[in-house]
Image (tube, rainbow, N blue to C red; front, side, top):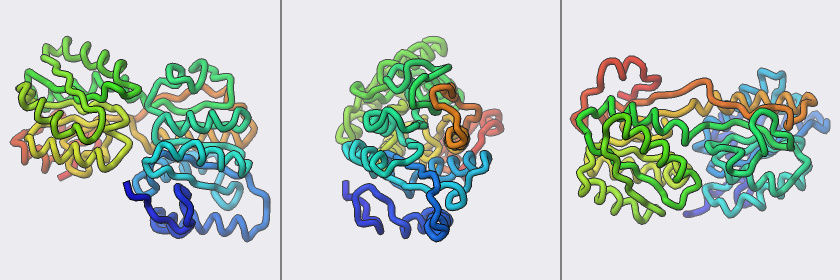
Length: 343
């Protein structure tokens, strides 16, 4: 993938002109104000596996939480942003760079890998992560209620929501007796996800066909296989191959349309670009909770004493234009409970 240019001229580092373009100049104004004041403000390091122009939840939610705790960038804290632009191999160096800058807190988003990179880089600087994986299972913290280390954060519960997604897909396309579950067999969440989905399919009386794709080059063949298996719908499981990279998400949407296969996704951003339906925890609210934790840590609380947070708000998104193109009439009840309807 071509590396995005930025005003800083350094790979993965976002410059002030880039921030202006993304968030209307607010962040750069605050940063410049901080420098002008000449005070040593607490420095927060932000580490994300994706790109700034598609990290709305990260850039919007966290400041909201910090504001709730009385923190405003440029007034009583400064910030440094590091973006891997989907190149996960850059994360260790980006995390190390933040540590070298002696940040007060590191905030990670865009999957589990940024949190693991930050954890490997420091055992003393507080880290607040946002992940869709079980943080205990994947080695971020030893326990949920009292992490007891320099890490705490938010669990987006991606795997745990697959049962709900399959149920909603069944409500939308009740005639689909065979459902394909698209999965990356090598993905971190694969085993947990397939266990969840298999149980849900059995309870709904559905025949589940597992379709594997280990990389984007296998997407076309995967959809052809689903069609050959007689699948009437597809659950695109929430593994990182299908969620982190926007090009991959867009390609899956294109293939679902090409094969006229109703597909359930795990991110509302996918529905905004043409996907049929998605169900997920609200990322902006999740990142807001992360911001609250960062504020509490800046006020002196120990991250090891702060329990891992879970979602409290969820988003059901439906694209009516896509439904119409597929000849699907969205049930009124499903439409009534949708949080986002794209017409």
